[in-house]
Amino acid sequence: MITIALSKGRIFDETAPLLAAAGIHSTEEPGSSRKLILGTNREDVRLIIVRASDVPTYVQYGAADIGIAGKDVLDEHGGDGLYQPLDLQIAKCKMMVAVRKGFDYEAVIRQGARLKVVTKYVKTAREHFAEKGMHVDLIKLYGSMELGPLVGLADAIVDLVSTGGTLKANNLEAVEHVGDVSSRLIVNQASLKLKRSALQPILDDFTRAVAMNVDTNK
Ligand code: PRT
Ligand code: MG
Image (cartoon, rainbow, N blue to C red; front, side, top):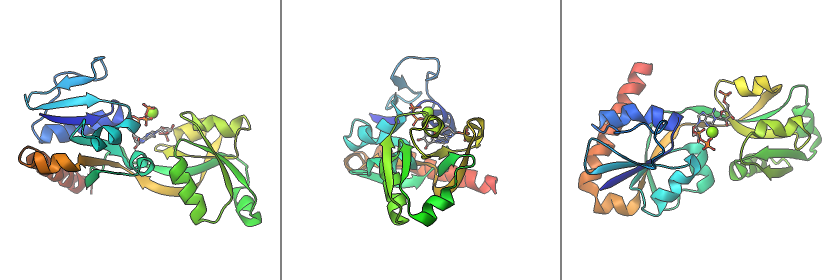
């Protein structure tokens, strides 16, 4: 049995065409089903639906052979025990620093003042500001980071931005690019050895499908 871990929402939606290219079709929609284990047209392949940030954990411990997770999630997790063969070029966005409109971020940098930052991505944020030699107080949140600067919890946020609509709606503006994010295929290292004959064709089909998509995007 091959178990593939992924999260519902944008990752599931954007992975479905890649799975289809490998001849794998889910028998249910995770959006409408409350099942956590979904069957596929292939008797030897099943999908498990987990929280986006839990995907690396399932793969690391071998409860899933393959997973699909954002670079944001993988950077925070650290990637222990994971083989990361492929950038799937899906669910793309940018990790940004954002502040309330009118907040003088440049002045904070110039003056070497302390910056209060809320984020779900504590490790990524710590590394980013350390590299810049900035002094920051990091406060971990689990969601709606955008609220932090509006109610005085922080001066800035480190969060993902795709359309920019959420920042705009909350009177925030991006002031710094932390990194580009896309989703990656991750594979359990033991599975890769023990189930190579079953896994390799799936990895090859994914690789081909990604290459074709990248070409047509040009
Ligand atoms: O929602 P849940 O708490 O279960 O987990 P999650 O938020 O991690 O999962 P999900 O499905 O929302 O995101 C899964 C993955 O999609 C992330 O790990 C990223 O790699 C990727 N991704 C791509 C995004 C976005 N784009 C994105 N825009 N993840 C989140 N966002 C959020 C962002 O945090 C912000 O709140 O969307 C908002 C901004 O969007 P715009 O379009 O208004 O700029
Ligand atoms: Mg979300």
